[in-house]
Length: 497
Image 1 (cartoon, rainbow, N blue to C red):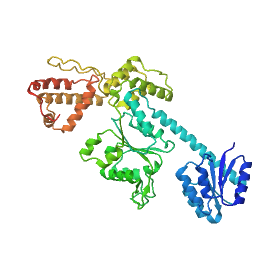
Image 2: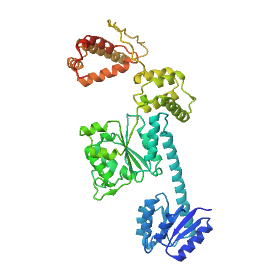
Image 3: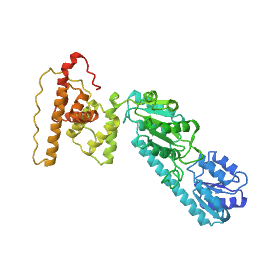
Image 4: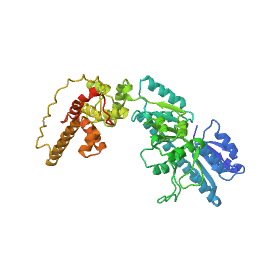
């Protein structure tokens, strides 16, 4: 059975002629003598590959049939046919989504070429859609054996075919986008766009134009109209990532979209209807933001129809070996790496590690090892990145702390400028250590005596603490802790730590 073509024309002779020509080309032909009959045929089980549509018909016009197809079957190619005198109507049809047009009367070769072109374009779009779907699935594959994650996967599948908003909560890097893509992939909208917008990545005035678009002349530089992401995601899914960073003005506009399904472009006068499924995600506690007045309570309740809380990776360590194997397969193939499994020592270290960056941090660690399979380097990276999930060491008895040895610096390894920079850094550490010791770890008082801001001092301490994990000289925190111990018997000190 050949490719199916639906011919829609109110002229009996034209329908018979087209049916004869198309059949001789090897196509399976169905005919409708009116717009109403064509709509009825499209609602049935027989799905044509192309619609050949006459524009001027009594009753339901060809443009009305085209609009119906764009609403219900947007990927179905439509070739419109009309006379030279109706060229304005043809232009309007192309703007509304027609794939091509033929001017009556036309030759058989013109018809054959037009059909071949639209079918090739349709096949190419389908291939691209399949590739994109496979890419989404490979990048967003849901890998877990944790009971809480398995339950989240079940919930995502259950809510996929509803239009209810979903609120996905969790720390940065836990996989909120993976859950959002799973919902989209399991829904009826899976062949429509999935659009992600990071609400924290743009200034709020630019974010508004990014979400809702703008009309020509809406502001300086708006030389032509631009559709927003809600229009791009029409009939698909839009993920509003980091929604907790959205301004109150945009929150009000988003609430209007959720309530009425329409919005207005910047500089526009007419409302635009949207049919995008909204999923919102954030790593902040929206309840606290509502209580503090930073997030609208009515928007929170609109979004919080279905709520999914994703636990951090340190609470589901059984997933770490599975995720390691998944990422290793992916990146080994991508980088043509010979690494097929992680060394036992490294995998055990991965399981013990707390992963403050969650799954994203684990993925990057596996990716680095795939490219540079050096176990010592990988373990050193772990120590730099955060705490290990091990019992805290027993408290040491109070004893004087010996002054640290100056490190040996080979002259050939560093330039004079680097040596000077390191010497200045060590001198700064010693001064800060001494002042902290004198102030009994009162950081605000120490910052005042050092004549730097409190925030600058905290940033230095945080950086040096990370370096201490690498064995860098200074022992600033140990000495400060020893200096602060005599205060313990007198109760905690109120230094706004």
